[in-house]
Picture 1 (cartoon, rainbow, N blue to C red):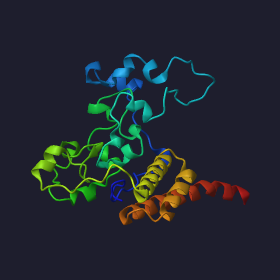
Picture 2 (picture 1 turned 135 degrees about the vertical axis):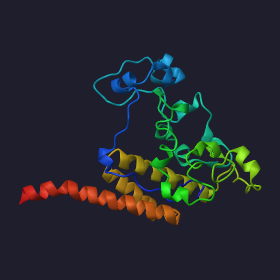
Picture 3 (picture 1 turned 90 degrees about the vertical axis):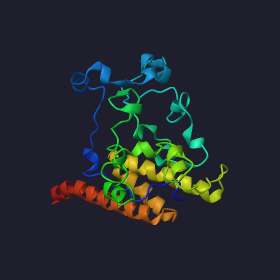
Picture 4 (picture 1 turned 60 degrees about the horizontal axis):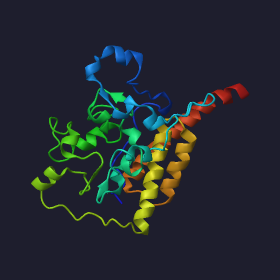
Length: 249
């Protein structure tokens, strides 16, 4: 079960509706950094590789892509979700944009935020510090030891780290049985709901999280995390209804 889930993943601080992310293509960001500091996505040289040649019709804010993510990304990049072993949650859910920017950034591998700030969007800092050998100096370099996509071990350890430790447990079989398929479906529902939460779609996120709880397939640490999300969503929805109640009086 834990193949598909993070242990102890709390909500981000602050309200979902007020979340803001830095746009690396914005004027302020571009002006603040010299050109040589940007990491550029190769297809940016030819926008049609991802966006096609058809002109946008109407005033829709939806980005036009030649294929949906992650299928679009897999045209050039490896299909990590098909690898044998344990797969990182966002990869299993096909949410490449949770960790990567599609155009340019000032971080390696086009990460949306630098390490470990990116990891702290989902993993709790205090929980990480309680893990053996995760000292103040070492735990902040997450990708030195952990692979961000897939690995033969549950902690997503890199081969060199695994070789220095005791022999890892055998990886799960490639063929998914019924229970594994159900677990993957619940994982995708969970990550989709979290994405809706941070996008301000509170009612949709609440419905998805409740559905995930009802399956009974969530590990206990994740059930506690879901309950924290639901509590915050309920508070936010209640606050949004308060002005209407005052007006009705």
